[in-house]
Length: 297
Length: 282
Image (cartoon, rainbow over all chains, first blue to last red; front, side):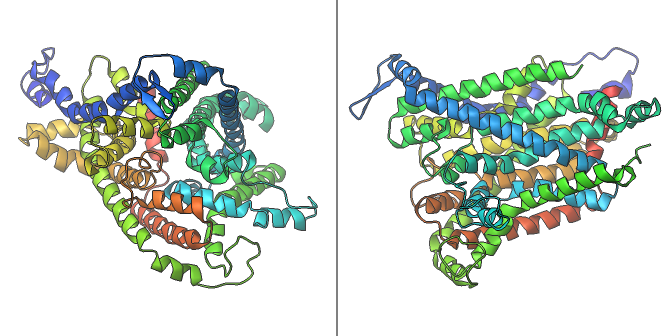
């Protein structure tokens, strides 16, 4: 509203913005900030508070202590859990990139808009189907008498059904499927922004397709690749539904430990476990942001 | 020229990429297709190929009243959460795009940070907080939590649309005497309607799919649909869930068709990306 007055009357005078303008953004942001204070910051503060309490003989003791931290961080059982979580997230990220990059490439290079739209819809539409449904679908697919084993047996690749479900393998396959749209999208968007003349210049100067890909396309789409890795890694760290449905109680990643501790009213352990998970996600974001800067030369 | 496209590639690479893409498509569709197939199975256990076909799981589903009320609750919750988030999220996005503020980067990072937070941490933290202030089990607690979860998506998508908006239009409207709210509703909103629509649909499904954040907040017997399904799966694995999932897939399919119909004149939101690029290079 201030703009209108300024441009209407005195165009040449440098715009002095009246004080009122400073309140406008605050007013617009206020509902969001209040909501985030109430349902985000305050809960996190409570969470932090609980991490300093302790749980003894089935009862919560509200005393300030580092005991829970100490117990959690020295317990080999929780170490294994942390290692499993990291291993799972890393495997899922690797697989997502391996499948996501070529898919994004194909989506980018398809020349018929109709076909491109359909492939795009197929890649992105699983987002609209509940994670519970998709995880359930994988338990059916990977079951001992399921289609995957049926194909493997039929082709004679294996002699007896492979155990793919209710272990880490099933969880990793399913999570890769669930995060695939989130991996394809950032890669695809860097490809779309790529200036086509760069590749043509490389080709004109005599570079083969492989050299062009390796020296032009890949380096320029590296930021997308890093962004995709960041998304799938952080999402995989916090994955809860899929490990509980496909893990069959055997894949005890950190989110499941947090859930269990909360159900067992051992809230200090839930809080410490959750904070460890939070720190891991935070470190991952920072590291990937660094990589992103590095990849955007 | 951008016409060095798939069919101009030498056959082998073209073939390999096509095969890989088809495998990828199969990988993407498989878990959803098998759920649909399994819902028509005649036996309670998972076996492939199916031993017979029947509609008994749909009959069983029809008798599970808990799923109906849960579905209704989920839809109402998702609609309310999306509505509130659209209003306050658009306000926030407008503030972020239109005004230069001190610490804008920090505020932006803060507004989007709930996405990075592992959902289970958020769910448990909110649960502990609401127990502490004794509002756990209130509908408002559940609703506000869902608003928080969908808000970052709305802010991100609406901001992206506002960045590409031609602000001289707004100034023109104001010069001609339109008030700020009229200008927003009649000049700005129509221009960003598609993005707002996409954001709304996306937010609806994000809320509709919440498990971790809702698990502890919903009162027993008043669960949302994904929670009801999640708990059902912990106990049984019969194809009733497959029948219900098929209904949900159908629902998502209808929304998908409607969405692609609404965007039939546009290609993928590629245009948006290219525009941002042009802007960045200016």
